[in-house]
Image: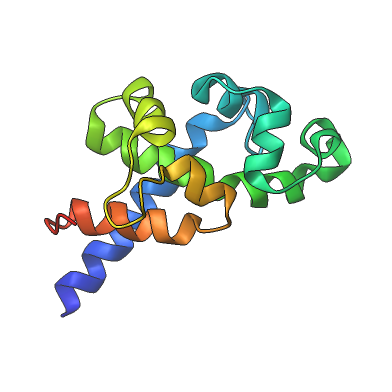
Length: 132
């Protein structure tokens, strides 16, 4: 049981480090432009996906709110990238691959519905060897 908790803590720390690549330079917050470019979506589409206003994504005063809104997307893409072998493959999976048990919905669809936690749980299950 202790080994499972230690593995979970180590995986979470590794995932947080992987997410830092979605920042601009030394900036402490995630870059909406970098994430949008990776996913091949516009900032307007990314704003809708993250549940924030389009102008919030580019306003410096909203950086903390944007970071919080984009964090689940960045975590999903980082985890999928680790499993799929690259960011481009992860982005394709995120947008186009239906997740079993969700009536043909993709990770993109589920995140847009506010179910990023379900996508992360699915990825964690797959990474642990459970295939749904």
